[in-house]
Amino acid sequence: MLEVRNATKHYAERPILRGVSLTVAKGERVALLGPSGCGKTTLLNCIGGVDRVNGGELLLDGQNMGTLDSDGLSLLRRASIGSVFQFFHLLPTMTAFENVELPLQLNAVPKAERQQRVQALLERVGIAHRAHALPAQMSGGEMQRVAIARAVVHRPDLILADEPTGNLDSTTGTQVLNLLREISEENDAAVLMVTHSEEAAGTCHRVLRMLDGQLV
Image (tube, rainbow, N blue to C red; front, side):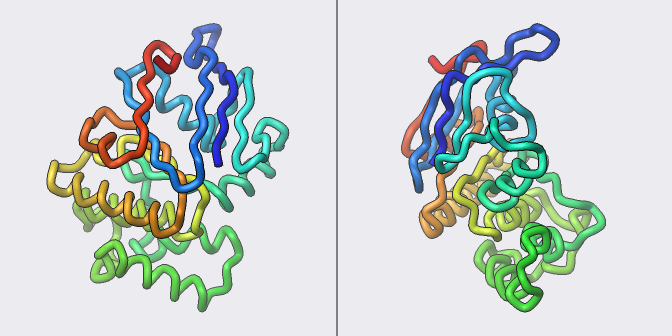
């Protein structure tokens, strides 16, 4: 599903990624561990189309992301990638329902289907009773459940998770990890998870470790 070939990235001549290569198969969950500043989030941002590598190749389901212009990259991201962040990144003026619905609106899914899929998914993640709450009215665990629902509502092939339990207590973190695993299995979606947590890594099939911009 995902292939990274000798990816390099630098900012102002400072190397961040130094020839990273990895693969993630369809339905596979892979954890990426390493100290702060080693390049994990930069790698995730490049895979997610938020940033671009300076060298090497990124292929998502055979599509070379480096050959796409910004519009093509946006279309690929909207169709095939779901992202879950440590700080949730929910839109503050939108309700839980509206936040989850947004990817479907961007993909021009008809309203009736949008509403059915969002409602079913909110029930699936145990947050249907908070459908009309704004992010400021929700707990961290509730916001992360909404964020996961938003990341998977368009049924992406790849889920990118950047420290998804970093701002949660241990009990809520475990619930979120179980939820992410279950949804991945149900949709046969690949997951690449950046984490400092050995517990989070334990929910994955494989663990990769990164140091100074390289896989070790």
